[in-house]
Picture 1 (cartoon, rainbow, N blue to C red):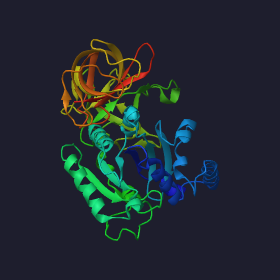
Picture 2 (picture 1 turned 90 degrees about the vertical axis):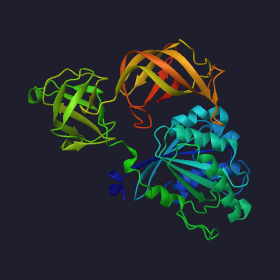
Picture 3 (picture 1 turned 90 degrees about the horizontal axis):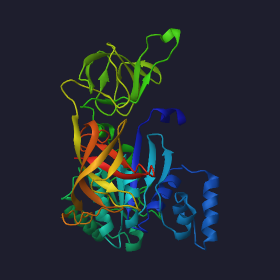
Picture 4 (picture 1 turned 120 degrees about the vertical axis):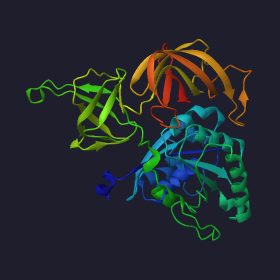
Length: 421
């Protein structure tokens, strides 16, 4: 089984939902029913469940790693879990449901292919459900699965399920989400999670596991616009590689082939790709998210932060950048005219906040133009001015060249995540 997993596709998914909607239980159920946990892990959570005076086995304890999480029975930080089936490898980001942890959800969801949004079948579409759907739309997560959970508590009622689906679809019509799927589940009982349930004969769609194993994610990357941010210049000073000068990095977009004509930014010089080296040696082409070393036919000076692109398809080169920012800093709000360090692809530069356009009400999508105090977990549209030009795309076009983070230079902590408009 391991051999066939080495080259199998990796799917990243994130969970979201209100407190006590059963996110951690769902992940525990996925891991347990797909035989992805060891017996000693199972025994440990069985004992922990007994210590807490609960019946059965509380599968939610599998993901809540922090002691404070287990004590309160909630998820606070993003917990990452890895598992694999013969078809695919998975990385799960289990993110918190509480409003005060919006920033943690953004962290877990920023690289996800799929967002699982849980809804408690008894409560229907709550304010938190809408907030999480808005964040999934803001982060351009390509696929959203609405898991209507705790169906066992409403006797697997089809009418209740249909009403929640209608309510959510009406709300989602305002959002920028292309692919939405609904599944009735019971994470506690295991209905429609890994195994199909005979208690929902009216549902003829896939189980959650079948969906995750088969959803088409190959085209989630941008294979059209070539973007290669240089991370490191490879110059081995050995006689065998006397003239070797390679540019190492991760392909952020497009397909790069040997012999392709490319343009180098910021210089604007054009040359051709002489060779592409991957982990296994020379290869004919490279595409996202591969990490490779590129050799060029001509000797031009490139360094970290520069970018290799196509001559007739280059990103926007600008020092004025408009972004939607999610603010992370609990101590200080975003400062107008404030100076921050900024990281974008492989560039580390400084910037100043030129303008705060508006604050976004994350529950209604309304724009608040009066209130310009951007505190932790707020989302706002702001304009930055950078100390030198960046090579950017809109976030909706490319999630790598379209995203950036802001860093407080005093504390060196990440204070904001931005999506370029």
